[in-house]
Amino acid sequence: QVQLVESGGGVVQPGSSLRLSCAASGFTFSSYVMHWVRQAPGKGLDWVAVILHDGINKYYADSVQGRFTISRDNSKNTLYLQMNSLRVEDTAVYYCTKDWRSGPHYTAYFDSWGQGTLVTVSS
Amino acid sequence: EIVLTQSPATLSLSPGERATLSCRASQNVSIYLAWYQQIPGQAPRLLIYDASNRATGIPARFSGSGSGTDFSLTISSLEPDDFAVYHCQQRAKWFTFGPGTKVDMK
Image 1 (cartoon, chains in turn green, yellow):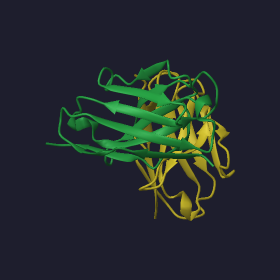
Image 2: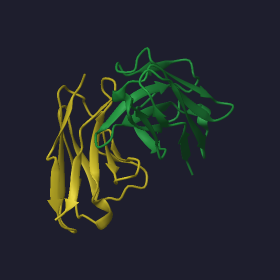
Image 3: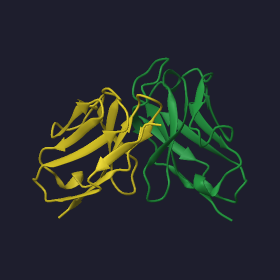
Image 4: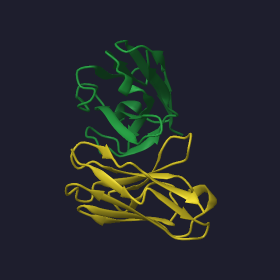
């Protein structure tokens, strides 16, 4: 079955960088659009970024544009999120999610989620 | 940005009762709306997509309806595992989520 396993979270100071990884298995990773979605403690869900199956086209929420970079390595079945210039308001559990349908376009319905990795930005 | 508003914030019901949750969009999202269930400490689970289609493996007691700006999720008869937070999400113009409705046990 589909498995998504995030890693790389931790406690960092404002202005720091962190790279999250998501190891995927149980499906043809290279055929699916992938997203990062985050959830601040006690808050709702917040879409962060999307990368199309070929790794070329990427889109970001305004709140992270210019600071975060999404990427993927289809040979390693792994999704990444490079986070630079971290802010206190970036504190959240970050989920790796799989788009619902395979193909070159996103549906932006998230049918599989990892367990999440907690990023805490604090001085 | 399309803002989603969910009501009520909390719904207190007993097992076996019917739950009706509402999601209202600030702009027309057509049918491009999904519902997710999140049990505390767990990742969300896709229940409904395109307003009324159940995702794979989702029991028939979950149903969605609506279009445009007004949507609802109905759980016909609550089971113990259904007490959770429910989020709506639109994909008509980028992707945003509502704040969630908590269904707790009375």
